[in-house]
Image 1 (spheres, chains in turn cyan, purple):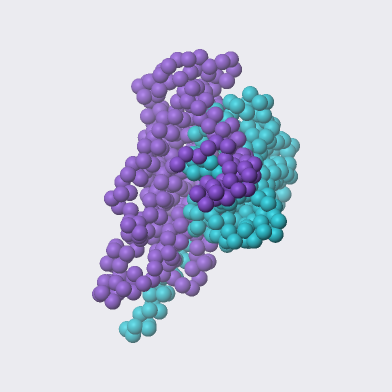
Image 2 (image 1 turned 60 degrees about the vertical axis):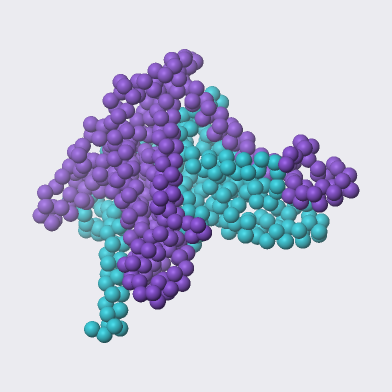
Length: 282
Length: 317
């Protein structure tokens, strides 16, 4: 074989292998979407089939009715409230804190920075019990406060991400601004913030999808079903003992993943950059 | 170099400031007021939401506390109970080590192999990368856990596929021997973010290394073991630590898919801790379980770091 042909053969092999592998990896997700259009009885007959014999879009309307008279409109509204406030809180506080670490020198800065890196490694599960006892004592159980308030004190991962970005901005800009009459605060609001918007965007996207997926905190703190976010509602909605309409269950499951996927496909540049450069979580 | 508490900033006379400036440039541009103002949310948050809870949970781990009433001191009883009298504790330990011990390597090996494959492909690499990252993006959600339960259920797609191929079906979630493996597969399936980190690591290896070694007559296999792998070791180290911690903390899959069963064969540690705290209201015992895990994570991280001296290659050394 000619070297050129050999190269081509190798390429074809690579693509066949990769696309086959990708297809196998995506099969569970495609299967879920397919099942969401199947009739309930069809879900279990030839269960592996990706495409339903008859497309039933009504599964979505039926699933949306939810349970106990509460529709998914309520659950989605709750999720949007929690996600929006928590994301705004995380990004605001994390940007402010990052500026303190990136641009101002103060006593014990290294120590505080080390503490921040350590809290980034500390899993939430390790402090959730004492936190619960504390918030319970505050009377915060069955409110959104335990899900929202902590985000206003900075998220170490976002602080780190934004901080790394700030370090790439030349210090000469700050000096020039100072000569023009800016002080530490106005340099932050007028010079730095507009320049770190990409890092803030990356953080906001991560925040969106972590909060959207968050299950543990709502499970611990929320008791009234009308306050449930989608994640918690879905758990009850899909309870194997209670489900009769399997098509509708798949429909609501698919729908719950849709916002994350949309955000991912629109903003994937930011996510990939965020993971590749700082390489944490995800 | 000692630094006086009242730092020389705006309040000092200008001439004194100038002298200080010459003496030590770095100390003079200290602005403690502004610095602490900007990081104050972090300090308050850390003290109230991390430091206090963690110390409080350390205290609680020596008490009996059911959320009503007040904690009563019982010394080391919680720890003694876990290690000597609680078979479920050992079940949970075993399950969690099996889960993390197999899930993490599977995830990392997959991530590395696919990253290597994608690094070679030039056309359409972005599309593969996006699609293969998708399971990672949705993988932690409740929706995927529910889907997984149906996928491996008795009437699920896996059994249906086996029937189609003429193979015997199996009660994947009902058999204690196989239930944990459905969770391990779910963990391994989400290799996307590790894959991205490996890809970034591969792109950072200077091309000149390969060119120079080719001139010296090295073949592709030699290059892989002598250049690619050593250059990637810092990234592998980082991934191993983060994924190990992450693996120990798994909760949702067993909570949703198998509820810890059958016969505790999927009782992940955090699920057992959760049950003690929020179903049996043994807050004291649950915090003791948390501390045991925290110490374990610390030991593991330290061991991985310690071992890194022998296998991690840093370019500047």
